[in-house]
Length: 159
Image 1: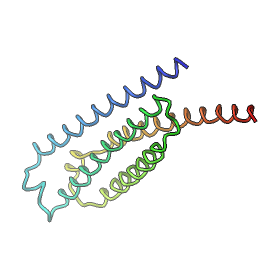
Image 2: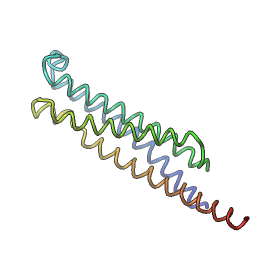
Image 3: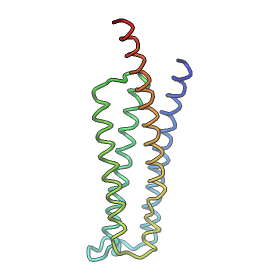
Image 4: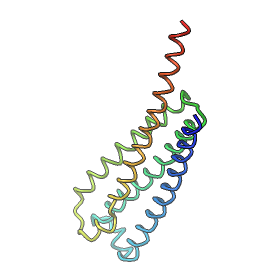
C-alpha cells in the first residue's frame, strides 16, 4: 500500500508541475503574440485574428480550470476518499470542459486568419498536455475500480 501512496503523491506533484509549466507557457505565448502583432490588429472585430485570439484565450482558461478539477480529484484519491460524491461532479465537469475545448479547436480551423497568427497561437502543445492529464485521470479511475472490487469481494465474503 505504501508504494501506491508514493505513486499517488508523485502523480499529484507531476500534475502540479505540469499545471505551472502549462500556465507559464500560455503566458509566454500571449506575450509573444502581442509583441509580434499590433494591438489594433489583435482587437479589430472585423478581422478573424480577434476571434482566433478569443478561442485561444477561452481554451487557455478551460485548460487551467481542467487542471484545478484534476488536482481536486487527485487530492480525494490521495486521501483515499474514493467514493466522495464530489468526484462525480469533477469528472462530469472535466468531461464538459474537454468537449468545449475540442469544439473550439475545430471551430478555430474555420476562422480565416493568416498562417502567422495560427502559428503564434498554436494550441497543439496544450492539447497534448490535456491528453496526458486525461490519461492520468483514467489511471486514477483504475485505482477507484480496484478499490471498489476489493470492497465488493469483502462484502461477498461477509454475506
